[in-house]
Image (cartoon, rainbow, N blue to C red; front, side):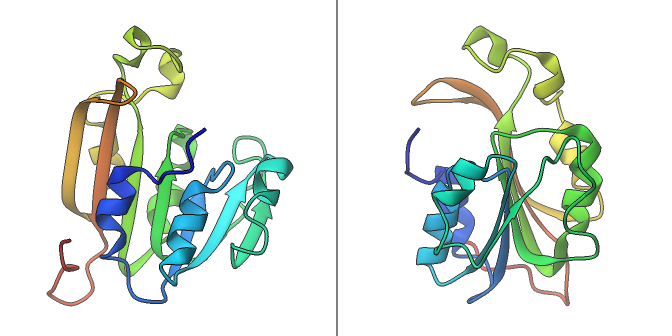
Length: 175
């Protein structure tokens, strides 16, 4: 597994409020936790894998071990200046994920889409976004950027979204 942050997350990281609170949901071993913390952001890392969470201990401002698909939502009522989700999809959580974005905050989401089965795993359609599904999940947010296509290195079929919850008139500065 690469320690390099997703180019999508890296592209938008500069638009996150300085010293902001960031949720990295289903963070795995913490490549985005480390990257975002190195930018001075306070990251809450959430994953069900205790060993994966341990890799960002001392870097994350907070670590929460939770099985997002079996347990109750671990962050009721909490909001963040940015919510980052990569390579993870559990449809019942989409409304809760969007609700975690604070006023003026960003949702950065990138995961596999239908067509990925031609490139490898995951291939189960339960874990692949349908066309436009990520846009639907961002209702109530202002979409800043959206991509749906084949990404390279490695080749994979993805959807990517950067969305902002309006606060005042000015969206975040683009990087």
